[in-house]
Image 1 (cartoon, rainbow, N blue to C red):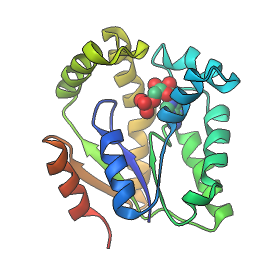
Image 2: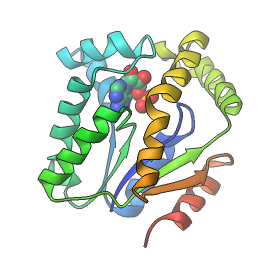
Image 3: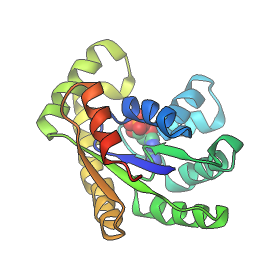
Image 4: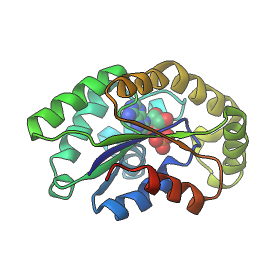
Length: 187
Ligand code: AMP
């Protein structure tokens, strides 16, 4: 199965994507995780990504698209994957369409975790106390939500019009949300 998981920052995408990847037996591909690994290893890609992510901005499409193209060509993604945090812009949607066409593959569904924005701000502020992530200051948190609303939320309509959108209530404990996702997946 080939899935996307979407939702605003702090909605719990990463946590759900890990268990979902196990369930579908596919690769969990998180662009945020790949950028963070590169930042830690101080690669060229990491240095570029850091400039943007520290400020709560998106990394430019050319950089992100090339990275995802490479990752989707790897063996473990051949049978299925869950893409977590990509696509995030309309340009990335087009690139993903092209990559999948080249691979002769198509998406089975796009999961949207629906969570109240105020609840998210509270979650993120709480996470900021313990994470030590540089992009977890209050200003950056608010900016990331705004960027999501302007750049990424419109993608939900695109996938909705393709009949792929699966909306799941993202409020509740992790297991409860996992169950809702499992129940909503296409068979
Ligand atoms: P995340 O952990 O998914 O919130 O990603 C952390 C940061 O990595 C984001 O704030 C962006 O700077 C960058 N990033 C992750 N995925 C993308 C993407 N698809 N397009 C652009 N930037 C991204």
